[in-house]
Amino acid sequence: MGGVERVKGLEGFVYSLILITLQRRLLFRDIFVTMFHMKKKTKNQPVRIVTHKNQVIPIYSTPDTKGGKTYESYTYSFMQYGKRIRRRAKTLAEAEDAARKAAVQLADGTGQLRTLKPSEVSDFIAAERILHKHPGFTLAGIVSEWEAANAALSGIGRISDAVAAFTKAKKKATLPDSTVADMVIKFMETKRKDGLSEFYLNDIERKLNRFASAFRVNIASITPEEIMTWLAMSGSGRNANNLRTSVATLFSFAREIGFLPRESKTAAEQVKKVKEKPSKIGIYTPQEISKILSYASEKYVPALAIAAFAGIRSTEIFRMDWKDIKLDRNILVVEAENAKTASRRIVPIVPALAAWLKPYEKKSGRVSPDYHNLDNMTRGFTALCHAAGVKPQRNGFRHSFASYRLATLKSADAVALEMGNSPRKLFTNYRELVTEKEATEWFSIMPVTASGKVVSFAA
Image 1: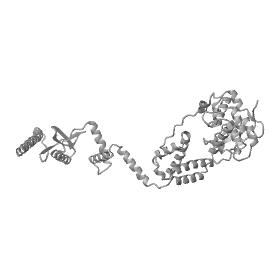
Image 2: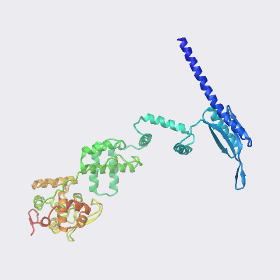
Image 3: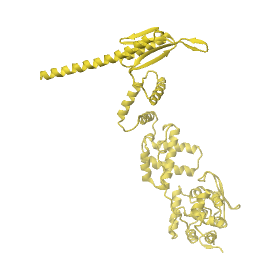
Image 4: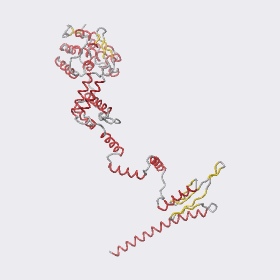
């Protein structure tokens, strides 16, 4: 074993000797070439020679002449990777200082840099500009820090994502706490001071209290995924979207008063609307509306007649007052605060509607039954349809009016103006659903007695 070790030691020694010999030959070559050029420049002798260890760099006086004037200039040269490198400086002191640095780098091996590609040069210049904005940092240090951070993420995301999450968590930590229930109270107090409709306030408070009952936590801790799950359990289609709108309104309010980060979307805003499946347009026939009106008690008749013969939305009827009904002028006024579109509109009272409303006319007071919320009124209408032996249709009264009125006026623009929606939607949904004869029958349904219990078709 000892003999083998000696052989290995000898081989290592020989290898090291060969390596040192090659390195010295390369060094002597660079020195020889430099001295050769120095000898060659007999007419222009170096004004200064900088040496460091085994490196020799001559400096020449190379003045410039421009516009008849001579300017001081100095050139120093050295060999790098077998290539002659020339650099210039304005003064001898600058040239000497730069040459000394080059000699040190060459002697220490740090000057043997590879040639950069044009794209690499561009990247280096861009990086150097950024470094100037952050004194005390080096390019190598920043790259090392990036490498460590990227390794820590282990491919689960980008560094920018980690920074964003960290910043968000820090900002959340500084936000004041508030449970959803407390935020609902603050929200409702503010909205009541704004003088909003009591119907709107009752509706949104009811929806937000449902949300508060499900989330007894700090509002800032709720995630979009949790809201999505709750919406899926609470409703579908339009109902889910209505709930989402109410919750998003609450979260926006919380952000405005400083309980959620101001610079980012709220959890509710990040929840997408549910895709609503287009439902089939269901309408009532003249015979069916006759049955419904004949079975209706007095408290329902005015609201049902307005729905059937004026096409007013259920929410608008629920908020309507008798002072909005001008029988002497044959118009209905839907005030802006009661309208879904928040814009005032005038609806004509057709003869059939005037006949049904006249026996119940009042100076003021609610037109609809005295229910606490719209859902109760809607359930009452549905129960009435069942009692009359008529299948209830979703938004059936409004759909029916639109269909029969369009067949009568033959103008989508005119009907859309009365109903407060777009002509395009009206034309697409209701065109040619009924005949002109059926429309005439619909608007000819009149009460025979003052009670409105018995109905017939006017000639």
